Length: 139
Image 1 (cartoon, rainbow, N blue to C red):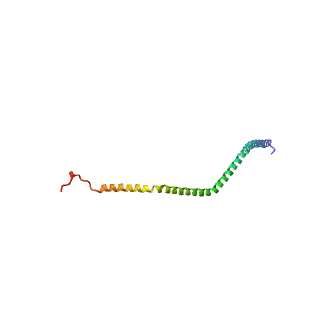
Image 2: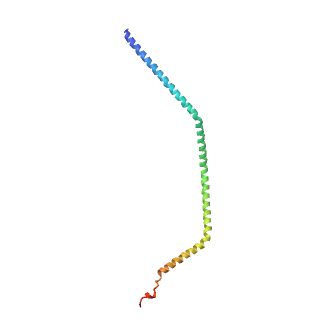
Image 3: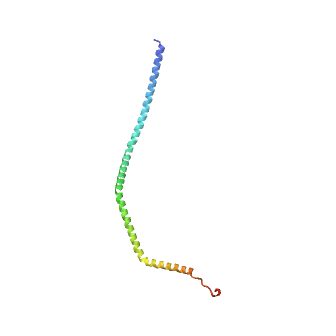
């Protein structure tokens, strides 16, 4: 078992495997450095975005406070608007009453006039036609 060719083959296999491990280790280190650079850039971008994100958070908080306040005061506002609308309706009906009341005699006179006109047309339609003396029927 002291053959030199077997020992040389084992040494060659060990050398090749050691070189393959070295290449894999070197490639892994390069990949990790690239990943580290990308993570550093991403971290820098996040740090640069931090003030904007803080401002956005403040804006969201302000909007939430405004909507909560609006939701709190909205029923009171609706009640006030409904009351105002009812007052306007009452005022409009009162104005219509005072505007129409003086015109009632005119409306009555106009209705009477239309009634008389309808009666005259009905009378004309129902009365016998006038017969001229030249067309009088012979007895």
